[in-house]
Structures are given as C-alpha cells and as structure tokens.
Picture 1 (cartoon, rainbow, N blue to C red):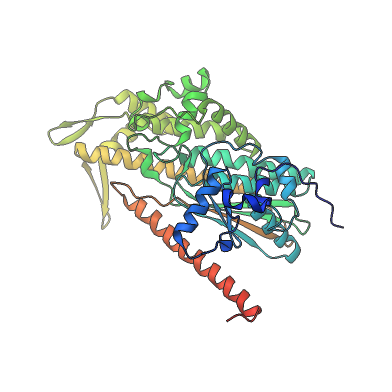
Picture 2: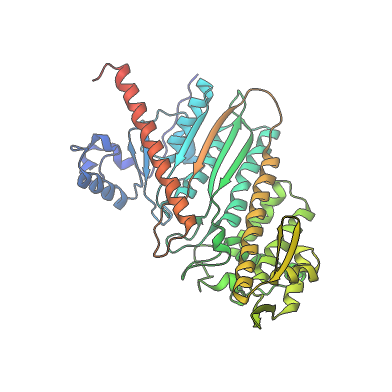
Length: 440
C-alpha cells in the first residue's frame, strides 16, 4: 500500500507558483520557450541559481550548479523523506530524486542501475556522489548486518577523500582520481556489499604542486591530527612548511577544511572498515616516509650523486622497514640487468632527484591501490545469492592548465570519451521512446 507523504517545507516551494516562473525560471529545460537557444538556457540557469535553486532537469538528466555555500534545508533526513517513493517530476529537481528513481527502478524491475556524474573540476561531483550514497543508506532496510554494510560504505568516503583528494585552485576538495563504486543490494533492496574501482590517480601531485595548491589531504591531516606520541614515532614536525613535498604550493591552510578533525574521521573510518592497529600503523609509517623523502637532498661529487643528509635517509629507511645501507645505495645507484649480466652504475645528481621523486610517486600509488583493495575486502559479500547492483561513477573534472602533463591528457581524454558515451546513451533512450510512441 502506498503511504501518504506529508509535504514539509522545501527550499524550492516557490516553484509551484506559475506567477513565479519569470522570477525563478523553469525546472525542466525542455519547457523553455526556445529550448534550442543557448542564451535562454543560460538565462534560466542564472535565474534559478540566483534563488538558490541549484538543480534543474533536462528530461531525466539532472543539471547541478555548485553554490559554494550551505543552502538551508536543501539536504537532510526530512528532505530525504520528502523525496522517498515520490514520482520523479512530482517535486522540484533534486539529486535525491535521481537516487530514489534509480533505487526504485532497481528494486521493482530487478535491473542493475548506474548513476553517472560528470562535469568540470569544482562542479560538485564529489558532494553529489556523497549525497546519493547517504540517500541510498537512509532509504534501505535497517538490520544488524545491513547497518554494518551501510556504515562501511559511508565510512569509505572520508578515507578515500583523504588519500585521493587535494586542494586545487578551483576546488578545496578536488578528487584527484576516478572512482566507480558498485553497491550490491539483496532482493529486499537492502545493501549487502560493495566494490570500488579506482583509476588515473594523479600521483605527480605527491612530488609537485602548483602555486596555491596542496598535496593530498592525508599528509596535512596526519601532521595536524596526529598526537605527540605518533608524530614522535614518525619523527615528524607539525608544520607542513618544513617539508618540500608539502610546501611547494605555499597554501597549506584551507579555510573550508579542518585537518585535525578530518584525521579523526579517517581514523574512525579505518576502524569501522576493520583495519587492524598494525595495518593502520604501517599506513602512517609509509605516509611519513614519503613526507621525509622529499627532504632527502643530493650533492654533486665529480659527476656522481651523494646524499647530503644521510641521517634523514636512515629515518626514511626505518619507516619503510628496509636496510638503511641498501636504501641509500638505491637512491644514488642504478642496477641494470642485460643478458644475465648485472651492472651497477652511479647516478648523477639530476638523476638522483628524479629517482627520489619517482620512488615517492610509485610508493604512494601502491599505498592507494592497497587501500582500495583493503576497502573492497571489507565490503565484499561472498554470498552466491542473486544481487542487484547500483553503480556510481564519479569521474575527474575536465581541466586545462598552463602546463598540462600526460596525466592531465589522459584525464581529459577519459572525460571526452565518457561524455560521448553519455550523449549516445541519452539520445538512444530518447529515440527508443519516440519509436514506442510512434513519433517520427
């Protein structure tokens, strides 16, 4: 039996008045007088944005504009309840409506669903994916094992954000990796597991940040949130400006983030996800080792490199749990194997710095991939019973810099291909609708 839904206050109730249309615009772009006019499209977007109406439909597609501020009553349990089980066009456009429609379609039709989120960097894709995840957790069942899965799905977000997001000149919490999450549901519509696939991690950020940008959040979270005993064990100082890898952007303070509180949330997330104390300690050791590694410097000795601060190199080796002698040699020498012969040659100073940075990037990438793999182990459901999937794709934002790396080329290429796929699927869906209705 369908339950009556009491309509509570919504931030967009003014849309229900036809007299207000000229003031706030239309909530679906297909209703524009001239829907082919780009000027009219932008004008409608501006009207709505000026009235804190950040969501607009294009048929079944949701367009969102990042307000860069908190809009009262836009999200939360009461608003979730308003959109729960309601016809897609019955209420004003909202990301909850997208999540609810996908969830109900999956449950009623027993068909897998996928929500694709794309846009420029800073458009609000990461926040949108978090809101969708929160809605799916809130609208599904409440049992012991179900709640445990929900907690793990929700707690995976701050952990991945800490290790995969960073402050850029366009966004204080920019995703620097692509993420596809599969949420598994049983026949009752309750979440029972999940799987995360990551790709295109911007590992170059570990060793270089542009002016006004930061390294990945976790480095600053650790320095700000780690207690005295932890920092002493890792031989770290709380000031990020003391470390080359953390200070190149000269912008380690972010007004919209609390690094100390974020570290507590990461620790809580790791605990909820089942990380052992030993795994967590090893994680902090590797992060600290990379932080120190950027301060290992070299000097030129007759065309060959030599480590200046050998004590620091020993500290890094200790944190990596490897032999200090072998580690120091690996920073200044290169070993080649050809036709069974092993040749060891000394590196120049320039080559040594390049090798140091390459090591930092490779280690961080492996830590990130291990973290994702460990999260998947925590979310895995080994039951062979039939499950439906809800896919959530949060892709990198398209960006063009003054100096574009190969990584950025791959990111933008991926965005272009994804946009082509999106348009193709959308047009195909519309064409199928036309064919069903006999429209030529």
